Amino acid sequence: MIEKVTDGVYRIEVPLPRNPLKYTNSYLIKGDKESLIVDTGMNREECYKALSLALKELDVVDPSIFITHLHADHIGLAGEFGAKEVFFSKTESEIVLKMLDDPSEYWRTILENYMANGFPQEEAKKMLKLHPGIRYTSMEKIEFTELKDGDEIEIGDFRLKCLETPGHSPSHMCLYDEDRKVFFSGDHVLIDITPNITWWPFLDNSLKSYLESLDKVCNLDVNLVLPGHRRLWKDLRKRIEEIRRHHQARLKEALMALDRPKTAWEVAPSITWDLVYSNWEDVNVVQKWFAVGETIAHLEYLFKQGVIEKEISGDGKVRYFRS
Ligand SMILES: [Zn+2]
Image 1: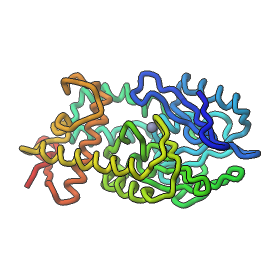
Image 2: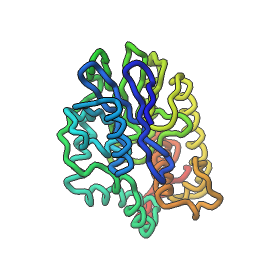
Image 3: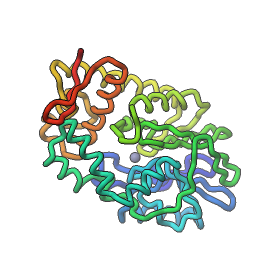
Image 4: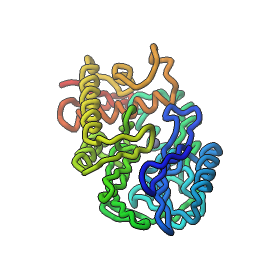
């Protein structure tokens, strides 16, 4: 599906079958001679078909690609379409290239931390087979054009400013078109669903980084938000205020759950998730993985604010507690 969102900008719906996100929004920015694809969907047949068909219909030759962040549903097809340049954050390009060098080492670091936070080993093994980041990411080594905060990309008469917004991922980047007051928010700000804020080995306090990144973009002069998933909307600031409240509520739930020292795995069922289930046991392992990651991020935030404490017990597990 292709939708013209404003002059020279098209939204392409790239389907994510059997994924609760439903689809990724790719955008095509069309200048006179050049064009830029913002995000690509996953490295899977259904995504490739949808995006290549749309590019054909829009008469795109020789596009460049901009990737908002390293998640598979955004970077998956960055190696396709013979892109002239693939623009990507310097920090994340280093992470991705390192991960491709040694995927098992990358996942082992992450797995070890989840297990220290109480995630059962058996479940973790199941997760590794299902995680979209492992199944559907781009496996090619791409020569990225590395970006840092404040860099500008010019496509025809579009001037797009790169804004680094760490939190959802280690060095997520949004694009801001000041002239048109259009904001490509990636997964930094979404509507109807809230961006997943999880624990990362590359961020000291991911929820703090995220909240600061919300502050960073909150006062931009914006008339249209073009997100990585779901629908477009106009009022960026109002949505940011809702997301701030959402995290405050979750922080409170996490704090209240600590009636005794608990691991993040034990705290997770006490937090309200955007999931339909009656029993925590029935939640599928990938969703549990995301929920526990979010729980760690919230507990670490409380810990680093000095609100709670933590200890590593004899069994090697991290338990948080109220002092
Ligand atoms: Zn996404």
